Length: 338
Image (cartoon, rainbow, N blue to C red; front, side, top):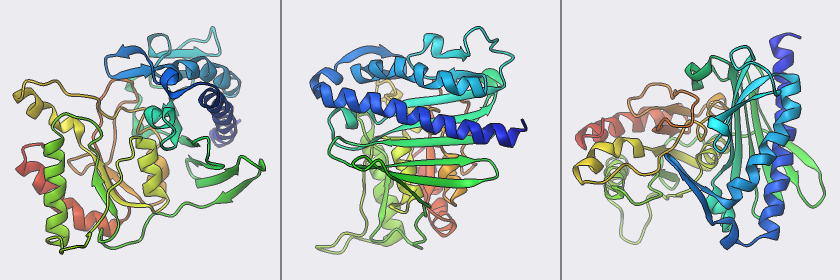
């Protein structure tokens, strides 16, 4: 079978694996309290593993075993032994053709407390071992983990050469209807959602200051009794990419890794940052016309590992990129962040 055929079969199998994993997560949320699911199981160097994550770990392996029969792989995810396993069992890591990185629950805390959807994220690239990079991804799938009171949820996927597809599932009827995501075509952030991520304590004041200056320079001073634009601190990178992809957000960015030096001066360590498994489905919004870059304006790229800290900037369209990018770059330099 040629590569196109393998990727098509892989796409179908991964989408099914996501749905199986989704059911395990939803069942856990239905049967156990947020207090139990939100208990800390263990602290890893770059993240905290909650009880819900632990429930998802064996389900991830079960769900991806059939996928590996189609395409043997190195499966990369937090919670796996040494961060990755080779599937099917007994295959050689250096010889299997695919490197598959997964975030089983992106936005764990939000779904534990039933505040907001989380996401299952997966990307597939040719296996180059630890040298495999985001820019080499050929297939990406992301599936919404809805709150229990939510009866609709979305699944998006992209395959090299075939564009982006979407399905909206109805949990009440079992019916799924296709839809095509469309990013915003707005030419300004005025009256739209535009923000920088500042989910957690740790030099949040710097991020807020950059954002305030950026908005003021783009839109002017805030009129009395009015709102120039809005923000949405969605603590899930996959969710943020979705919001850009479907036209809800016009601008978003996560510059937390740039704060390391400032935090060092304050005698504080760098806190939780975005990692490659969080951005692994970047190809989906990019294929729709969303522009994703690093803070220096280069195309977003990173090793597909579990440790690297990733900063990213997202613009819903070319017009917003041309308008916002020069101002943001100047401000990041002015604040000593790049």
